[in-house]
Image 1 (cartoon, helix red, strand yellow):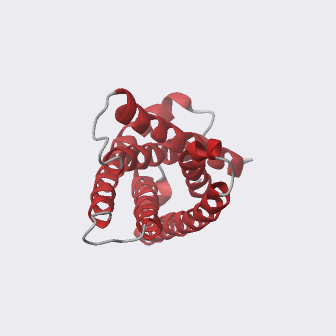
Image 2: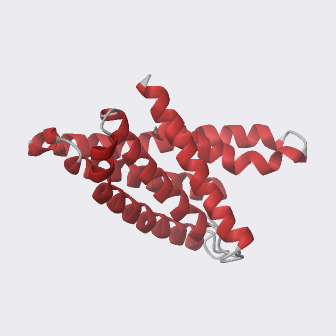
Length: 194
């Protein structure tokens, strides 16, 4: 049952971030020329916050008030790390998209998703020390941190490869399906990170 909650939290968090990014780009009209500088921070922060909150509430589902008190500091850290790495990733993507560099879009997307996955894994692993008494053991904490980062990078790499495969298949369908590529891809990223 826990795995379904993690997958669902990943999908919902990714879609919240994507929708927030679309709101900033479309409704507010900010940074339309550089959408990666908006989308990546929104999605990365939303996923990091969602994964940390999910871990807190799934680990102790009957202690809602205690979980809310415990969650404040880890959520702030996750949001800060998600936004920071998202901005960094968006900046790197913008540089790689410059005509002088001519990096293929597929390579840029895979690199960006690896950064995002690593940031989410780091957020989840790093904030574990404030959520668990087991984190008092430094060896166990470092092991958890390392596994979280590697798991985040691995999940994002698989998601990027699957997304490119799906994107290729959707490209052969009528143009009405073109609008679902991004939400579908980020949902896949969220599900695998979950």
